[in-house]
Length: 355
Image (cartoon, rainbow, N blue to C red):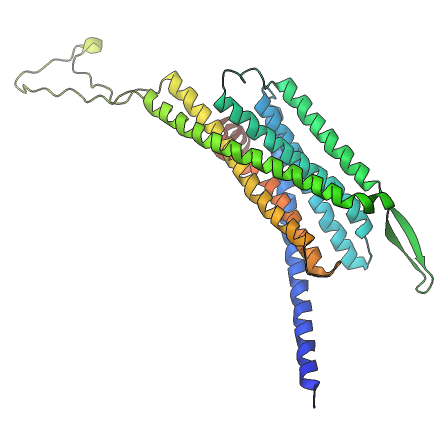
């Protein structure tokens, strides 16, 4: 029985698969560069704008902190791509350095998730219980809380990273050296507990955000109803039923002055419109974060129960795609601010000379 054709077919399939994986790798690398640079540039813009406008209230402090955290998310994403490029060009194994960079990346993404949860909770409580929470969220309290959250995530991830170390290993056969990641015994025992803990925190944040989304949608609907009620009624111009009698125009007291059909919005209407914009901004930020986080969670679940062999290209590419989603989540805030934040939009347009 001749099996040569079958062997040739299998070789062709393997070559096609290898070529496909190389193409996918380059696509992910280019996408990572684009998304990472976008996140860095856009969040640097956000940071500068909010600093220029002044951190006058709790909301501005939250948006500034979120922009700063997302800026580092994009920066670390670029670091991943740089390491991958060096590995491919120099044929070096730099996974040990990439491994430690992951902990910084996770710190920034977890901090951003916590800040987004706090923004959603703050806005939802202000909508549901405005009189009780009016003075609860101050600039000072928000700054202290966000700082504490960052320190907590940074300390926990750095302690987790310290359970492993990089060692230099010499290969006498090839007369070369390489960096090797040595995993400590503590890490092997605590890995499952840490993964479960992080999954529970992420799940809790998503539940809180979904509840806040419901509250914000109800608040947005109520706000629009108040705006509609605060608008002045449309007045119909008076029509003269006796065309034979003319009314002379006598200056400022002229009775022939045309009546105004629409009057300017009241102060209450402007205030309700501003509140509606703030709710819409928070709502879009939270919904975007929830959608991308759920997608990221699906990828992590697939990785946890993956049928691919450990260390395979499929595992690496799926993990990279998850990082890109995290970085994309960090890059979209600029467009939300430009859509719903009037002060932000006016400042950017003024600096760009678009006004």
